[in-house]
Length: 321
Image 1 (cartoon, helix red, strand yellow):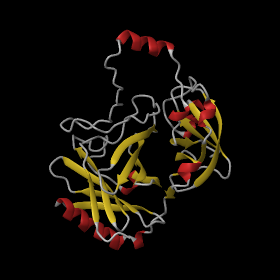
Image 2 (cartoon, one colour):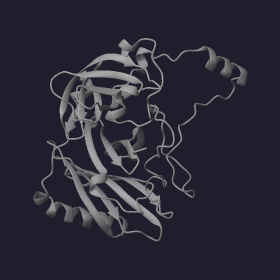
Image 3 (cartoon, helix red, strand yellow):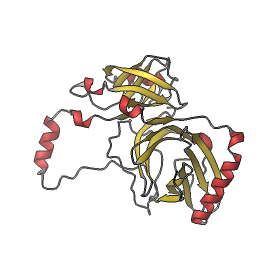
């Protein structure tokens, strides 16, 4: 146990949290970034473009037209995200293209759900999209979406629920969400509120303990009082020795705050922790943030003595048409 109390602050520019359903979902690559102009209205971040300095435009165009999407062994992700079908027997990970060798994706063996359920999975096939699709990532549109299908082996998945898919190596590092009883959190929430208010000298209007883990890590959402139209929320991680937090600032613009039509107000039901993964020198938290159009998943990597990394790694549009 450490003898000194440590604190790490994550400061990010103002961004909008959730996307709309105006465009079809495509799998978000690892280059997704959250930086945006702090003076502009918050919007879902655009994908980071690769640097092309020194490469002729004609060559780039020829490469795009002639090359087929491929995945090398060194590019294989260790974590992916999908959702379950209506009977809980399948999970799909959406891709906008097929890989030259789909067997490269067979290394995902486990799935962790929104309620902390643990599933054993096995790669089945690559499903191509069809004209009956409606652009919604829901169980009712499951058979029309394009992506990798995984069969659930040991139990049934929760219909329409989001899952994080893990390799055996990553699975062994996770701490799974545990339900938090309200009666047990009142005192700790009061302490959290006072701690956060002292750090930035700003009142807290709401805070919710989202999860407790067997290693005593507690994860919470803290919502601060507005300063004019400036909004601020934190995701906090406290292991008893080190208190860390990641900022989610936004600016109120009519009915839009962190997302469309939230009016600058957050509720506990907007958030779910899928799981945390314990790395050698960091802790990764996967946070689902819901709104009226659907949800996004944030990957937040907390370090002990430096600013956390935050990025959007997946999204779902589930709004009615």
